Structures are given as structure tokens and as C-alpha cells.
Image (cartoon, rainbow, N blue to C red; front, side):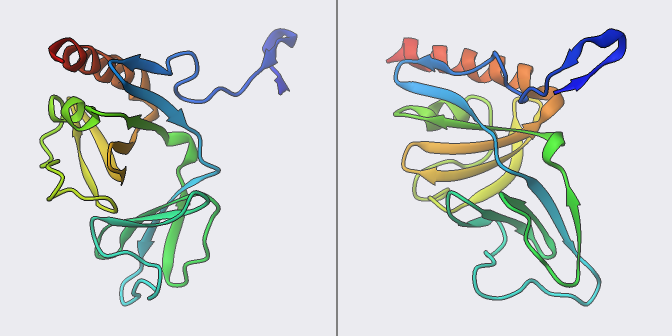
Length: 175
């Protein structure tokens, strides 16, 4: 906590503070606050290290650190920073809101807002995509049978929660 102008206290808040959790019909939207979100862009001539580095549009890792690959030379590291030789690494932690949408019907909720093919045999666990949620740029990761993690620009967190909550209510009303 820091002291602000006029002697008041400044308190850091997460992007979705006071907005979540939201639950409708067994589907819940909540926030995940990772230690860090870092973009990785490989410099010309450099290549991704082998081993745990995922193929494009996939993610690999665990609850502590996840690498989300978007294509040749472009990725996010979610969690503690990672040494990546031959890459430009930029901390983007304050730029993103990270949310989890889970429960039976989570895919149906996303299908109302996202043009991504989310069929279970196409977008399987371990897949990632840069797409849209409504009109907002988003990164989607399928992290379980009925679980998706979403990265949306921090400035759009309130809108994202509203849009996803509305879609959740519509899916729940259908059921």
C-alpha cells in the first residue's frame, strides 16, 4: 500500500475485483491472478527451446507456470518469469485480466460469444487460441473438460464479465 495525493492510501486491485465470481446454472466465472504474465518474442534466427515448449496454439505447463504458444516466435508465459535466450521478454502482468469459466455448459456460454470452433473433438484440453469474446480480443485456453481460462485486456474486464454473465444466464435459462 502506498500513500497517494492528499495522504490517502492507494490499494492495488485485481482487474476483476468486485465483479466475480458470477454463477448461473452450474457455470461459474471467476478470476485467476497469476504471479506474472510475460510475452516472449523470439529474435530473428532464434528458436524456441525444445522440451516443454508447446506447439503453436497449444499450452504446456502446470498450476505454477504455463507457456502458451501462438505461432512461430510468439508466446506468453503465465507464472514466474522464465529465462528464454534469444528472445525479447516483456512483463505484461498489468495489461491482462485472467478469468476461468467452468462447469457444464461453459462451452455453450463461449459459443454464444466466440467464433472459435470449440467442439470437444476440435478444441481439446491443451489447446489455445487468440480469438474474440464478443468484440474483445481474447486468449482462450482449454484447461479441462468443462474448464476454459481466458485472457482479456484489463481495460475490458468489466465488459467481459458483463457479456459472459449475460451469456451464462441465457444458457442457464435454456436448460
